[in-house]
Length: 386
Image (tube, rainbow, N blue to C red; front, side, top):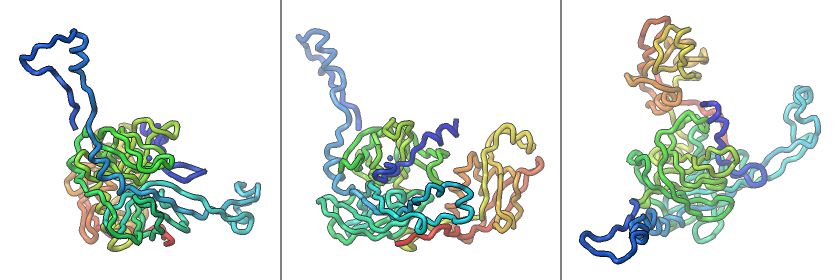
Protein backbone atom coordinates (compact mmCIF):
# COMPACT_ATOMS: atom_id res chain seq x y z
CA UNK A 1 0.00 0.00 0.00
CA UNK A 2 2.87 2.38 0.80
CA UNK A 3 4.34 1.98 -2.67
CA UNK A 4 0.95 2.84 -4.20
CA UNK A 5 0.69 5.95 -2.04
CA UNK A 6 4.20 7.07 -2.94
CA UNK A 7 3.50 6.48 -6.61
CA UNK A 8 0.36 8.54 -6.35
CA UNK A 9 2.02 11.52 -4.77
CA UNK A 10 2.64 14.27 -7.26
CA UNK A 11 4.74 17.01 -5.78
CA UNK A 12 3.19 20.30 -6.79
CA UNK A 13 5.81 21.32 -9.34
CA UNK A 14 4.65 24.44 -11.07
CA UNK A 15 6.76 24.60 -14.21
CA UNK A 16 4.68 26.11 -16.98
CA UNK A 17 4.59 24.09 -20.17
CA UNK A 18 6.29 20.93 -18.82
CA UNK A 19 5.00 20.15 -15.33
CA UNK A 20 2.76 22.11 -13.06
CA UNK A 21 3.44 21.96 -9.59
CA UNK A 22 0.18 21.53 -4.54
CA UNK A 23 -15.05 27.95 13.13
CA UNK A 24 -17.92 26.45 13.99
CA UNK A 25 -20.96 25.39 12.00
CA UNK A 26 -23.84 27.75 12.60
CA UNK A 27 -27.25 26.13 13.04
CA UNK A 28 -30.40 28.14 13.58
CA UNK A 29 -33.14 26.68 15.74
CA UNK A 30 -36.42 28.17 16.96
CA UNK A 31 -36.19 30.03 20.27
CA UNK A 32 -37.37 28.09 23.32
CA UNK A 33 -41.06 28.56 24.01
CA UNK A 34 -41.73 30.38 20.75
CA UNK A 35 -44.73 29.27 18.73
CA UNK A 36 -44.44 28.89 15.02
CA UNK A 37 -47.17 28.92 12.42
CA UNK A 38 -44.88 27.64 9.70
CA UNK A 39 -45.58 24.17 8.31
CA UNK A 40 -43.40 21.36 9.73
CA UNK A 41 -41.39 21.12 6.48
CA UNK A 42 -40.50 24.82 6.65
CA UNK A 43 -39.51 24.47 10.30
CA UNK A 44 -37.17 21.63 9.38
CA UNK A 45 -35.55 23.77 6.70
CA UNK A 46 -35.11 26.66 9.15
CA UNK A 47 -33.41 24.33 11.65
CA UNK A 48 -30.85 23.09 9.12
CA UNK A 49 -27.34 24.60 8.98
CA UNK A 50 -27.35 27.66 6.74
CA UNK A 51 -23.65 28.37 6.34
CA UNK A 52 -20.12 27.11 6.90
CA UNK A 53 -17.30 28.83 8.77
CA UNK A 54 -16.88 32.52 7.97
CA UNK A 55 -13.34 33.23 6.75
CA UNK A 56 -14.16 36.53 5.04
CA UNK A 57 -12.28 38.61 7.61
CA UNK A 58 -9.31 36.24 7.56
CA UNK A 59 -9.16 36.34 3.74
CA UNK A 60 -9.33 40.15 3.69
CA UNK A 61 -6.39 40.33 6.12
CA UNK A 62 -4.13 37.76 4.49
CA UNK A 63 -4.50 37.35 0.72
CA UNK A 64 -2.35 40.38 -0.10
CA UNK A 65 0.59 38.75 1.66
CA UNK A 66 0.53 35.77 -0.74
CA UNK A 67 2.59 36.45 -3.84
CA UNK A 68 3.01 35.03 -7.30
CA UNK A 69 6.49 33.69 -8.04
CA UNK A 70 7.97 33.22 -11.49
CA UNK A 71 11.43 31.80 -12.09
CA UNK A 72 13.30 31.30 -15.34
CA UNK A 73 15.44 28.18 -15.45
CA UNK A 74 18.07 27.17 -17.97
CA UNK A 75 17.35 23.67 -19.27
CA UNK A 76 19.60 21.87 -21.71
CA UNK A 77 17.88 19.98 -24.52
CA UNK A 78 19.78 17.69 -26.83
CA UNK A 79 19.00 17.86 -30.53
CA UNK A 80 20.49 14.43 -31.20
CA UNK A 81 18.10 11.48 -31.61
CA UNK A 82 20.82 9.38 -29.93
CA UNK A 83 20.93 11.53 -26.79
CA UNK A 84 19.05 8.94 -24.73
CA UNK A 85 21.00 5.98 -26.11
CA UNK A 86 23.22 4.40 -23.39
CA UNK A 87 26.00 3.66 -25.92
CA UNK A 88 25.99 7.30 -27.06
CA UNK A 89 26.02 8.60 -23.49
CA UNK A 90 28.89 6.27 -22.55
CA UNK A 91 31.18 8.01 -25.03
CA UNK A 92 29.83 11.55 -25.03
CA UNK A 93 28.02 11.97 -21.70
CA UNK A 94 25.50 14.76 -21.20
CA UNK A 95 26.98 17.32 -23.57
CA UNK A 96 23.86 19.27 -24.41
CA UNK A 97 25.92 22.36 -25.19
CA UNK A 98 27.64 20.44 -28.02
CA UNK A 99 24.86 18.26 -29.43
CA UNK A 100 21.94 20.48 -28.59
CA UNK A 101 21.14 23.82 -27.09
CA UNK A 102 19.90 25.37 -23.88
CA UNK A 103 16.45 26.80 -23.50
CA UNK A 104 14.75 28.86 -20.83
CA UNK A 105 11.69 27.44 -19.09
CA UNK A 106 9.41 29.27 -16.70
CA UNK A 107 8.22 28.00 -13.35
CA UNK A 108 5.15 29.48 -11.70
CA UNK A 109 4.05 29.16 -8.10
CA UNK A 110 3.21 30.99 -4.91
CA UNK A 111 5.04 32.53 -1.98
CA UNK A 112 4.26 34.10 1.39
CA UNK A 113 5.61 37.42 2.65
CA UNK A 114 6.92 36.86 6.18
CA UNK A 115 8.45 40.28 6.90
CA UNK A 116 7.56 43.85 5.88
CA UNK A 117 11.07 44.36 4.47
CA UNK A 118 10.68 41.72 1.78
CA UNK A 119 11.50 38.20 2.93
CA UNK A 120 9.36 35.67 1.06
CA UNK A 121 9.13 31.93 1.79
CA UNK A 122 8.17 29.45 -0.92
CA UNK A 123 8.93 25.90 -2.07
CA UNK A 124 12.34 24.86 -3.33
CA UNK A 125 10.75 23.26 -6.40
CA UNK A 126 9.02 26.55 -7.26
CA UNK A 127 12.41 28.25 -7.47
CA UNK A 128 13.91 25.34 -9.43
CA UNK A 129 17.48 24.48 -10.41
CA UNK A 130 19.94 26.47 -12.52
CA UNK A 131 17.89 29.59 -11.95
CA UNK A 132 18.58 32.57 -14.16
CA UNK A 133 15.95 34.90 -12.73
CA UNK A 134 13.24 34.95 -10.05
CA UNK A 135 10.42 37.50 -10.02
CA UNK A 136 7.96 38.08 -7.18
CA UNK A 137 4.61 39.77 -7.86
CA UNK A 138 3.52 41.46 -4.64
CA UNK A 139 -0.02 42.38 -3.58
CA UNK A 140 -0.17 45.66 -5.51
CA UNK A 141 0.72 43.81 -8.73
CA UNK A 142 4.31 45.04 -8.82
CA UNK A 143 6.90 42.68 -10.31
CA UNK A 144 10.07 42.74 -8.22
CA UNK A 145 13.30 40.85 -8.94
CA UNK A 146 14.23 38.53 -6.07
CA UNK A 147 17.49 37.27 -4.61
CA UNK A 148 17.71 33.64 -3.49
CA UNK A 149 18.82 33.66 0.15
CA UNK A 150 18.88 29.89 0.39
CA UNK A 151 17.00 26.65 -0.29
CA UNK A 152 16.49 23.40 1.59
CA UNK A 153 15.75 20.30 -0.46
CA UNK A 154 15.10 18.22 2.67
CA UNK A 155 11.92 20.18 3.44
CA UNK A 156 11.35 21.59 -0.07
CA UNK A 157 11.52 25.17 1.22
CA UNK A 158 13.23 28.25 -0.17
CA UNK A 159 13.75 31.82 1.03
CA UNK A 160 13.76 34.87 -1.24
CA UNK A 161 14.47 38.55 -0.59
CA UNK A 162 12.99 41.42 -2.56
CA UNK A 163 13.81 45.11 -2.35
CA UNK A 164 10.56 46.42 -0.86
CA UNK A 165 9.20 47.90 2.37
CA UNK A 166 5.93 48.09 4.26
CA UNK A 167 4.68 44.85 2.75
CA UNK A 168 1.62 43.12 4.22
CA UNK A 169 2.52 40.00 6.19
CA UNK A 170 0.73 37.03 7.73
CA UNK A 171 1.57 36.53 11.43
CA UNK A 172 3.11 33.20 12.38
CA UNK A 173 0.87 30.62 14.00
CA UNK A 174 1.85 27.70 16.23
CA UNK A 175 1.35 24.59 14.10
CA UNK A 176 1.77 22.35 17.16
CA UNK A 177 -1.63 23.58 18.37
CA UNK A 178 -3.49 22.49 15.23
CA UNK A 179 -6.15 19.86 15.71
CA UNK A 180 -7.56 17.31 13.30
CA UNK A 181 -10.85 18.60 11.77
CA UNK A 182 -9.90 22.24 12.46
CA UNK A 183 -10.89 24.60 9.65
CA UNK A 184 -8.07 26.07 7.56
CA UNK A 185 -7.81 28.21 4.43
CA UNK A 186 -5.35 27.74 1.58
CA UNK A 187 -4.24 30.78 -0.43
CA UNK A 188 -2.23 30.60 -3.65
CA UNK A 189 -2.18 31.01 -7.40
CA UNK A 190 -3.56 27.78 -8.90
CA UNK A 191 -3.35 27.73 -12.68
CA UNK A 192 -2.07 31.36 -12.49
CA UNK A 193 -5.35 32.55 -10.92
CA UNK A 194 -3.87 35.00 -8.43
CA UNK A 195 -4.82 35.04 -4.75
CA UNK A 196 -7.32 32.21 -4.89
CA UNK A 197 -8.69 31.00 -1.54
CA UNK A 198 -10.03 27.54 -0.76
CA UNK A 199 -11.42 26.21 2.49
CA UNK A 200 -11.16 22.83 4.18
CA UNK A 201 -10.13 21.06 7.35
CA UNK A 202 -6.98 19.55 8.78
CA UNK A 203 -7.29 15.92 7.73
CA UNK A 204 -4.23 14.58 9.60
CA UNK A 205 -1.11 15.76 11.40
CA UNK A 206 2.46 14.48 11.38
CA UNK A 207 1.99 12.73 8.05
CA UNK A 208 5.22 11.04 6.93
CA UNK A 209 6.47 8.20 4.71
CA UNK A 210 4.70 9.61 1.66
CA UNK A 211 7.85 9.97 -0.47
CA UNK A 212 7.74 13.73 -1.06
CA UNK A 213 10.83 14.95 0.80
CA UNK A 214 13.58 13.54 2.97
CA UNK A 215 12.29 15.30 6.10
CA UNK A 216 8.56 14.62 6.32
CA UNK A 217 6.22 15.93 9.00
CA UNK A 218 3.27 17.22 6.97
CA UNK A 219 -0.10 18.73 7.72
CA UNK A 220 -2.66 16.94 5.54
CA UNK A 221 -5.65 18.99 4.44
CA UNK A 222 -8.65 18.65 2.16
CA UNK A 223 -8.62 22.36 1.30
CA UNK A 224 -8.36 22.40 -2.49
CA UNK A 225 -4.69 22.64 -3.53
CA UNK A 226 -3.99 22.59 -7.26
CA UNK A 227 -1.01 23.17 -9.58
CA UNK A 228 0.31 26.65 -8.81
CA UNK A 229 -0.63 26.53 -5.11
CA UNK A 230 2.86 25.32 -4.17
CA UNK A 231 4.55 27.76 -1.81
CA UNK A 232 1.25 29.35 -0.80
CA UNK A 233 -0.18 29.83 2.67
CA UNK A 234 -2.22 27.55 4.91
CA UNK A 235 -4.02 29.79 7.41
CA UNK A 236 -6.04 29.04 10.53
CA UNK A 237 -9.26 30.70 11.70
CA UNK A 238 -7.29 33.38 13.57
CA UNK A 239 -5.58 34.55 10.40
CA UNK A 240 -2.22 32.98 11.31
CA UNK A 241 0.20 31.18 9.01
CA UNK A 242 0.27 27.53 10.06
CA UNK A 243 1.80 25.93 6.97
CA UNK A 244 3.32 26.27 3.49
CA UNK A 245 1.41 24.27 0.88
CA UNK A 246 3.79 21.89 -0.85
CA UNK A 247 2.26 18.88 -2.57
CA UNK A 248 -0.85 17.04 -3.60
CA UNK A 249 -1.77 13.37 -3.80
CA UNK A 250 -3.37 12.84 -7.17
CA UNK A 251 -3.89 10.22 -9.84
CA UNK A 252 -4.91 12.85 -12.38
CA UNK A 253 -2.63 15.79 -11.59
CA UNK A 254 -5.53 17.81 -10.14
CA UNK A 255 -7.31 18.23 -6.83
CA UNK A 256 -8.50 15.05 -5.15
CA UNK A 257 -8.92 16.21 -1.57
CA UNK A 258 -5.46 15.31 -0.25
CA UNK A 259 -2.90 18.09 0.07
CA UNK A 260 0.22 18.44 2.18
CA UNK A 261 1.71 21.50 3.88
CA UNK A 262 4.97 22.01 5.79
CA UNK A 263 4.06 23.02 9.39
CA UNK A 264 4.84 26.62 10.31
CA UNK A 265 7.05 25.66 13.27
CA UNK A 266 9.32 23.71 10.92
CA UNK A 267 9.22 26.53 8.35
CA UNK A 268 10.38 29.02 10.99
CA UNK A 269 13.37 26.85 11.95
CA UNK A 270 14.39 26.46 8.32
CA UNK A 271 13.94 30.17 7.55
CA UNK A 272 15.98 31.15 10.60
CA UNK A 273 18.93 29.01 9.45
CA UNK A 274 18.65 30.22 5.85
CA UNK A 275 18.75 33.84 7.03
CA UNK A 276 21.75 33.26 9.31
CA UNK A 277 23.81 30.78 7.31
CA UNK A 278 22.30 30.51 3.83
CA UNK A 279 21.67 26.81 4.49
CA UNK A 280 20.05 24.60 7.10
CA UNK A 281 22.40 23.10 9.68
CA UNK A 282 21.38 19.57 10.63
CA UNK A 283 22.85 16.77 12.62
CA UNK A 284 24.20 13.65 10.95
CA UNK A 285 25.76 10.30 11.85
CA UNK A 286 26.85 9.73 8.26
CA UNK A 287 25.14 7.90 5.44
CA UNK A 288 22.81 5.29 6.95
CA UNK A 289 19.91 3.83 4.96
CA UNK A 290 17.13 2.37 7.11
CA UNK A 291 14.03 0.41 6.16
CA UNK A 292 10.90 -0.72 8.04
CA UNK A 293 11.05 -3.84 10.19
CA UNK A 294 8.67 -6.25 8.49
CA UNK A 295 7.49 -9.54 9.95
CA UNK A 296 9.74 -11.41 7.53
CA UNK A 297 12.82 -9.35 8.46
CA UNK A 298 12.02 -9.70 12.15
CA UNK A 299 12.09 -13.48 11.76
CA UNK A 300 15.37 -13.44 9.84
CA UNK A 301 17.05 -11.07 12.30
CA UNK A 302 15.73 -12.78 15.44
CA UNK A 303 13.89 -9.65 16.49
CA UNK A 304 10.42 -9.40 18.02
CA UNK A 305 7.82 -8.09 15.60
CA UNK A 306 6.73 -4.55 16.36
CA UNK A 307 8.47 -1.20 16.51
CA UNK A 308 11.94 -0.75 15.12
CA UNK A 309 13.78 -0.20 11.86
CA UNK A 310 16.55 -2.09 10.08
CA UNK A 311 19.89 -0.73 8.92
CA UNK A 312 19.97 -1.68 5.24
CA UNK A 313 23.10 0.07 3.98
CA UNK A 314 25.69 2.49 5.37
CA UNK A 315 28.99 4.14 4.56
CA UNK A 316 32.15 2.77 6.14
CA UNK A 317 33.44 6.30 6.72
CA UNK A 318 30.31 7.29 8.66
CA UNK A 319 30.32 8.15 12.36
CA UNK A 320 27.67 5.46 12.83
CA UNK A 321 29.89 2.70 11.40
CA UNK A 322 32.98 3.92 13.25
CA UNK A 323 31.04 3.68 16.50
CA UNK A 324 29.67 0.19 16.07
CA UNK A 325 26.49 0.34 13.96
CA UNK A 326 26.33 -2.34 11.26
CA UNK A 327 24.04 -3.36 8.39
CA UNK A 328 21.40 -5.75 9.68
CA UNK A 329 21.14 -4.08 13.08
CA UNK A 330 17.62 -3.39 14.31
CA UNK A 331 17.38 0.13 15.78
CA UNK A 332 14.92 0.07 18.66
CA UNK A 333 15.29 3.54 20.16
CA UNK A 334 17.22 6.81 20.03
CA UNK A 335 17.83 8.65 23.29
CA UNK A 336 15.35 6.29 24.96
CA UNK A 337 12.54 7.16 22.53
CA UNK A 338 11.10 4.19 20.64
CA UNK A 339 11.60 4.29 16.87
CA UNK A 340 8.52 3.27 14.90
CA UNK A 341 9.44 4.13 11.31
CA UNK A 342 12.35 5.38 9.15
CA UNK A 343 11.03 8.95 8.83
CA UNK A 344 10.99 9.39 12.60
CA UNK A 345 14.61 8.22 12.82
CA UNK A 346 15.70 10.63 10.08
CA UNK A 347 13.97 13.54 11.83
CA UNK A 348 15.45 12.72 15.23
CA UNK A 349 19.01 12.54 13.94
CA UNK A 350 18.62 15.66 11.80
CA UNK A 351 17.20 17.60 14.77
CA UNK A 352 20.05 16.56 17.08
CA UNK A 353 22.50 19.30 18.01
CA UNK A 354 25.84 19.13 16.26
CA UNK A 355 28.58 18.07 18.71
CA UNK A 356 26.28 16.08 20.97
CA UNK A 357 26.05 12.30 21.28
CA UNK A 358 22.98 10.15 20.58
CA UNK A 359 22.27 6.88 22.37
CA UNK A 360 21.14 4.30 19.84
CA UNK A 361 19.71 1.06 21.21
CA UNK A 362 20.03 -1.83 18.80
CA UNK A 363 19.22 -5.51 18.56
CA UNK A 364 21.87 -7.72 16.94
CA UNK A 365 21.71 -11.52 16.84
CA UNK A 366 18.92 -11.39 19.38
CA UNK A 367 20.95 -9.35 21.89
CA UNK A 368 20.38 -5.75 22.91
CA UNK A 369 23.13 -3.18 23.20
CA UNK A 370 23.47 0.61 23.28
CA UNK A 371 25.80 2.58 21.03
CA UNK A 372 26.92 6.15 21.60
CA UNK A 373 27.36 7.94 18.29
CA UNK A 374 28.63 11.54 17.93
CA UNK A 375 26.49 13.91 15.90
CA UNK A 376 28.36 15.68 13.12
CA UNK A 377 27.34 18.47 10.77
CA UNK A 378 25.45 17.24 7.76
CA UNK A 379 27.50 17.70 4.63
CA UNK A 380 26.16 19.75 1.77
CA UNK A 381 25.60 17.64 -1.33
CA UNK A 382 24.49 20.34 -3.71
CA UNK A 383 25.66 23.86 -4.45
CA UNK A 384 23.07 26.27 -5.76
CA UNK A 385 23.96 29.11 -8.05
CA UNK A 386 22.56 32.44 -6.91
